[in-house]
Amino acid sequence: MCFMPPSIWVKVPYWDVVDIIEFEEPKKFVALRFGYYRLKDGKLRWASQTTLTEPLEVYKKLFVKAAREIGIFRNFLRTVLKEAISQTNISLSK
Image (tube, rainbow, N blue to C red; front, side, top):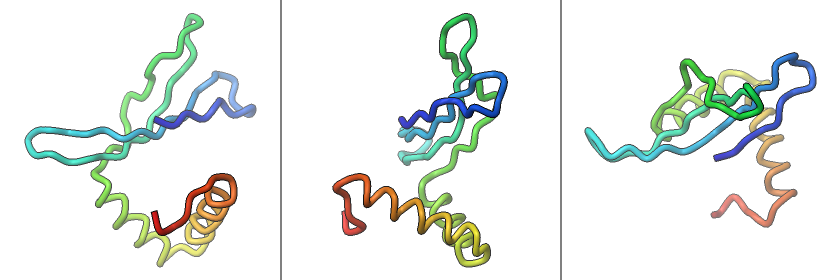
């Protein structure tokens, strides 16, 4: 699970979350979920009424299609990968 602290521009603190969910039934698959937590009564609580949750293959197809069709998205993905690689000891071959 990956948390992002709340943005300074929002009045109510929300923590964006990306996590992986492994489903066993009706068939086994791995999904990526985007949601958020909210600070309420001093506790972080799951607050997403709805989430974006799809199998990894669906997101892969969507991201490839968007990268081909939307230049800003393609540049965004390049920037993300460049930063991730420069800030860690990962490579694209892993």
